[in-house]
Image (cartoon, rainbow, N blue to C red; front, side, top):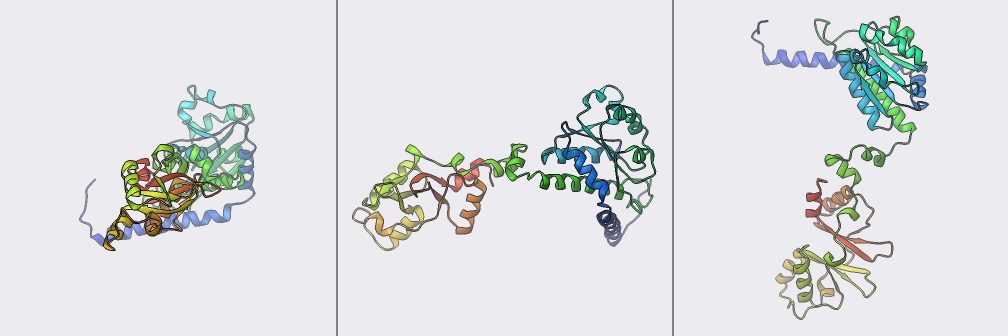
Length: 328
């Protein structure tokens, strides 16, 4: 294989042509969402076991992705390699399951080899092929047509448009089922507890807020000097101002202190109620941490007071808490 001199515009032309071909292949799928698609979804919705997805080669990679997408969106699923299935992994499949089999030709020998067991178990089999007259398509309970006019590969050999079409069809199934199941963000988070995604979806203000002895607060009758001592002791760069029932009346921050110095107030003879920010932004404990972050960014503030249904102070949250949690 030799590498010939290539102009920059040729590379961009090649890439744009690939995208055009694959775009057209995906666009044609819209007209194939028919009763066969509905039947496939019904089989999975009625499944009391799991969705077993299989495919060989590039189709196998797509099958693995489809299985992962189904599993993370409310339809328990896993991938079985058809070659390994013939050497013991068929034991993973039960009479309660549904199978999705991918093969562009519909004649992949490794996939066809496991057909007798599927028939013996009498489980529904959904086939995704590019040939409606293939063995796999004709043996399927439901056949999804993912044929393409041409591969993006100029040799017509490497699966490109065909694998993209199969992947999109798999996504269509997963999202349709997600909507029917009323699958929520909380449900999604339960299967994605790790990393920043899980943290953004699972963590609430209550999980991160400072409370009890860590919570800075002073009364309306306190002097600014008293508020400074409280802020220094609790190390949150702010303090809440509350009445005798712990109802929030305002907040005083490091920034308010700097602004106060410009007016030459005496910290020992100035009531905190005179310089606090009233009508301050508050948040409830059950609010998602990611929403609290968004609120801080919109208001350009670094801290939030947390209150209950009666507007009583129950906690405090600052930007550093969110940074440490990985919500960013």
